[in-house]
Length: 324
View 1 (cartoon, helix red, strand yellow):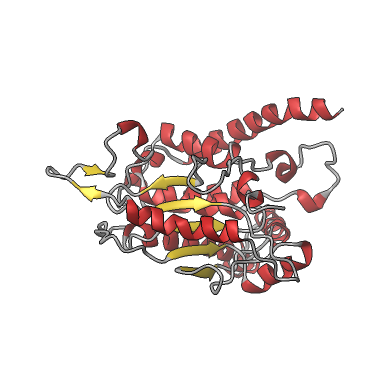
View 2: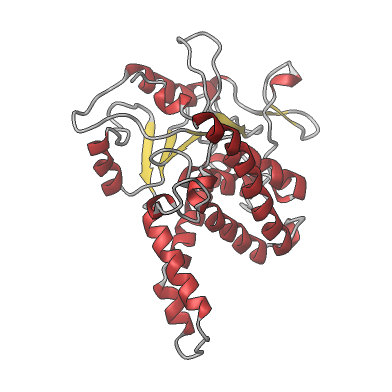
C-alpha cells in the first residue's frame, strides 16, 4: 500500500505534494497555530518498511503550523493569519480546564508530538500484522510518546468485572478494593492522562500533535475528543457535545455495531467492547470535578449514549443491506 492508506482509512484524500489535499487536522489553536491531527498506525511490518510520502506528510504538519502561526491582534481577538474567514479554523480554543495561556509561535517549527495510544510492546507486536510505529530516526523533528492504553479485549474484561462487582450487594469493608481490582478506574486514568498531555502540548507549548492507535477508531477518538473538551468550551455545551460525537465518532467510522454487539455476528465477543461508554465515563469524571464548566449533566450523557448508538446503527443498516 501507499503512504495514504492510514490517512484515507479515515476518509482523507492524499494528492501529490503541493496540490490541494484533504486535511487530517481536526482543530487548530488560533493563538499559536498548533493543530491536533489523527490517523492510524504506519505500515512498517517486521521488514521495517519505509514510505517517503508518509514521512513527508507527517513532518510537514509541524512545518505548516510554523508557516501559518496564530497571532494576537489588537483587542485580544485571535486571528490565524488568513485573510479569508472561510479558511479559519473550526475551533477557538479556550483554556478553562487546562488553566494555561497560549504561547507565541516564533516561526520555528515545533517538534511534532506523535502520541501512540498503545504501549511500545503492543506497537512492536503489531509489526507481525503489517503495522508498527514511527521511528524517530525517519521522522525528523518528531517525538513519539507511548501511552500504554489497554486494547479492547482488556477493556471488555475490565467492564465485565465492573458489572459483576456492581451487581453484587455492596460490602463496605471491601467495596473499594473490589472496585480497584476491576482496573476500570486505572483505564480511565490513563485515558485522561493522554488527553491532558495532548491539550497541554497544544495550549501550553504550542506543539502540533498527531494521535493514533492501531486502526484509529477506538482509542484515538477517545483521546482526541476528550482533549477537545478540555480545550474548547463549545464542546461542553449540549450542541457542541453532539457535534463532537458526530464528527469524532460517527464520521470517523467508530464501529458502534461491532463494539455494542448489534451486528449480524453477535456471538463474536472479540469485537465487542464498551469503548464509547468508557469515554462517556471519562467525560462524567470531568463533569463531576468541574460541574460549572459544562452546560449539561449526567442525564444528558445517558440520553446521548442511546441516541448516538441508534443513529450509528441506522447509518450502518443500508451498508449491511448492500452486502446481502
